[in-house]
Image (cartoon, rainbow, N blue to C red; front, side, top):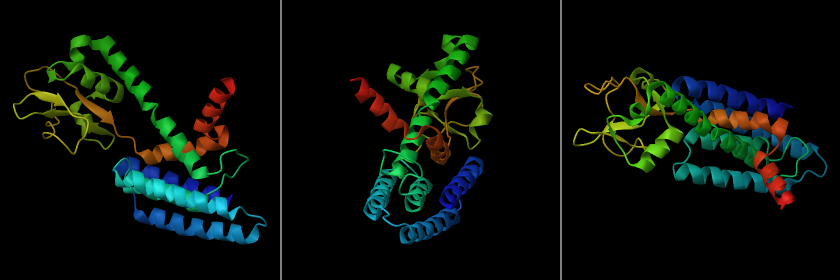
Length: 243
């Protein structure tokens, strides 16, 4: 129970900080990793027949995967540290499970839950389409059909002032020739457009993608694991069982 409480508190506090400021105090992870390692060491020493080899493999694999996805830029440093904290604290499942490596349950559940942003964006944009009409979605924007499709699934139309909050990343930029274009990677391409309504176009909204921190999905995936277990493993088992 102490280990579950530690991870729950660390992920909850980190999620709260990330949602408010997009920054997480590194001390959260240092405390969680050190305390979790101590609790795991105590469990190893006091539990007869503890599966130390499997637990060790779980920690090593999780750390390697976390560092790998952090290195290629898929996750931020806080996400990497969060996975390592889960690994050293709870390398094995705290409940009866057929999956040997619990950190991957948290990671997998978090990834599945993060995909729910796609139908959420789709519904948001469908409602916007119904209210304002087809031309309003991409009016005044130069984009290919593929770019529009991606924007429709991963972005939403919001007021320019809303983009200044920490919960959205602007997808709309101004090209060198002054045209509005869609860019899906903020670190590349032309500069961001000014967060004000576009003059002359009559538009009061811009394209932006929801910026919900991955830590929030890790927390949700962690909590979901106690209700539904490993979602990916369960789904794979159902598919294989039906085959």
